[in-house]
Image (cartoon, rainbow, N blue to C red; front, side):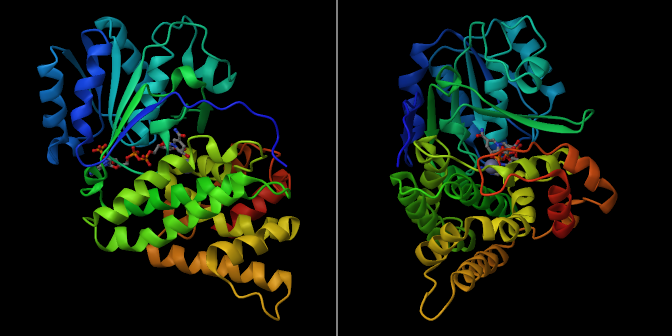
Length: 388
Ligand code: NZQ
Ligand code: ZN
């Protein structure tokens, strides 16, 4: 049964190989000062920076540079971005990059006019913004997070060994996002692989919860099938537009709030992965991959019928003459096979985690209660040990 909900997605999308030109339609809606947010320089190498700057100049904008947003953006970088925005009285935060740039832009957007300490207010106390929010726009160059069409913003605090996400409301979502699948052609294989698993796991997080019949789960299955189908094509042939465009569209739908509507959700792989990330600063999608199988094997008996459905619907497991447990296990084996073919990190040791870190990582793991089993701290430690 679908629960009650309201649904609004505030982000306007422009999708396709000519989508960047629509920046010309959006820019006139905002004031003159544009904070141009980007990462470590990939956009300078692949020409996206020049193309964006040309459009900004043609629209008479003052460009305020804010580069060096690192993967897993830090609280120090957030404070720096807020300072730049305040000094330049910015009217629009334009993120050109992946989830890190887009998440960071959202964090800056709610902090510019905030009198409080943003880390404490938004990431420790999970309060909502009560100040004027500066609008965010996004030109996406990496697939995975869904940040281009959601209110999520994840910030890392290395001093406190915490990586925390705040899901802000509609008013913080990007006002517009430009999605050109060709912009992903230059992604290193490792990033593309991590992004693909991030997408798949976002869907799993919303799927592996609840026992009721609801439309969201059917949409989730269709998205998972599309990701699996396009994944290896997109990895082996980076310039295969069909596969890259399907992956990009799946990423957006996997986490733009739609498939969570009317149902409960899990998100424990992300809680574990984020805690691993806080200790290792590893690539987000890889942290998820490294803890997924131990976690799913652990919760499978508590949500057996959904794991059976996953095996049959997503992995085409033939159920004939098999027990439910055998079917469910076969589904997870197929998942493992696919993950290995993609070249994902299959354990947290590969990412730099050590046995001595397990207690700390377990302490940094938020325990949520929407999945098939509410984990105890000891069970979290057990899953992390099995992930080593
Ligand atoms: O910094 P540059 O030089 O641009 O290089 C980036 C970066 O090193 C590179 N890259 C991006 N586009 C490229 C490219 N290289 C070549 N060609 C291109 N077209 O890729 C690297 C990774 O980029 P990043 O933005 O860090 O990746 P991703 O999109 O996976 O974002 C990760 C962050 O998003 C958070 C993660 O925790 C992490 O902090 N998440 C945000 C979510 C949300 N907003 O809802 C949900 C997710 O679960 C996730 O937690
Ligand atoms: Zn994710």
